[in-house]
Image 1: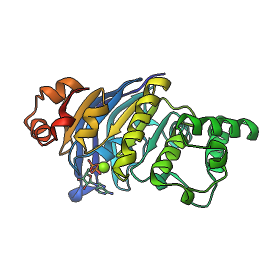
Image 2: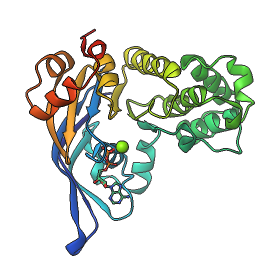
Image 3: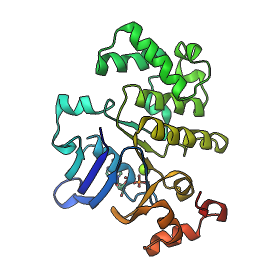
Image 4: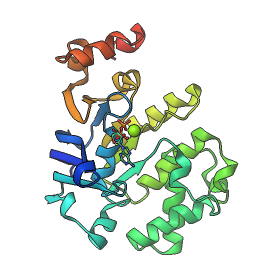
Amino acid sequence: MSGLTIRDLTVTMGTGQRSRQIITGIDLDVPAGRITGLAGESGSGKTMTGLATLGLLPAGGRAAGRIEYGGRNVLDLRGRELNALRGSRIAMVFQDPTASLHPMLTIERQLTDHLRRHRGLSKKDAVARARETLEVVRVPDPEGALRKYPHQFSGGQLQRIAIAIAIVCGPDVLIADEPTTALDVTVQAGILRLLRSLCDELDLAVLLVTHDLGVMSALADTIAVMRHGAIVEHGDRHQVITAPADAYTRALIDALPTADREDG
Ligand SMILES: Nc1ncnc2c1ncn2[C@@H]1O[C@H](COP(=O)(O)OP(=O)(O)O)[C@@H](O)[C@H]1O
Ligand SMILES: [Mg+2]
């Protein structure tokens, strides 16, 4: 299947006099087999865009417009249909990997619960698929890792495990919100390389959300830049980095270290 097409998405927080539009009618394409970068300063609306896609806006948040996936508008889905989509067809990883993990359950249990619920696999098949997925995300000693608990892993390994949980049911779309921001710089590059290879090998549509334009310029195929709830720039990586159309984007790029600006 395919990726996401976002059209005229608005998100409003609160009601009546206190209501505030935090996303103001954005268009964004997140195609399969590509990493679509969503950059922009803190508070620009990147996280809310990702959460709206999964119907996970915080209390008081309302989304309007279209988020097209598989011929449906995700914003029209409710209850069971929305649940089937979340975590199964469209998955998300967060800055803090522990947000996706239960502290008291083994890694095996967390991966297999997901598979049995969404995919209806037998225990044996689920364990095999869980082990395979840990191999895909390159967690060392997958067999041993299955028996451990989250606190027994480093931050970088935990983020790999959170990614394993996200992809274990074979989603089409992966939304990664600041997936390396909380990690030691020495492990960041490994996680970014993993996202690249998952995108290429599984034909995943990846929406990579980050405030870090350096990460973006190293990894994304296309880049969208948000500011104050609007998309001010959207184009292929090379074009956005070397010839940004928007003054705000240009200022962000000028602030990058020279090495990050080179278009690899
Ligand atoms: N729980 C919330 N309730 C109300 N407003 C929120 C909430 N979370 C974020 N916001 C507001 O939504 C806007 C966009 O935030 P967010 O999407 O988190 O930005 P980003 O991820 O780009 O840093 C900000 O103005 C922020 O203050
Ligand atoms: Mg954010």
